[in-house]
Length: 95
Image 1 (tube, rainbow, N blue to C red):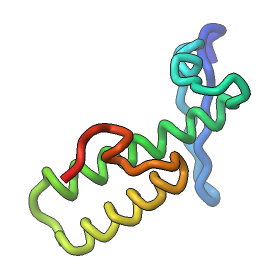
Image 2 (cartoon, rainbow, N blue to C red):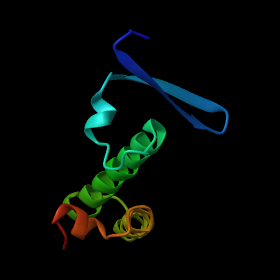
Image 3 (cartoon, rainbow, N blue to C red):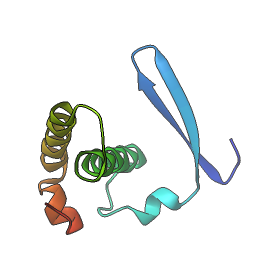
Image 4 (tube, helix red, strand yellow):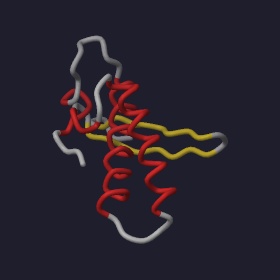
């Protein structure tokens, strides 16, 4: 790890992957003074998965549309549970 970077490890069961982020980048997303770096990175993961689920469900083609829309709906529920607002309210983008 470089001195000017933040190492982030994602673990799922017995698998893991590590990424490096520029030092200070996480602070750009800090909304509350007591938010931890881990909470901020987790928020960003929820946002990224929500955005991709929305894009695939509403702007993608092919696949099992019913299954894709069900996954997107579940992700939107998780987004709202975490952030206390809908994806549409947070982004200004809804269908």
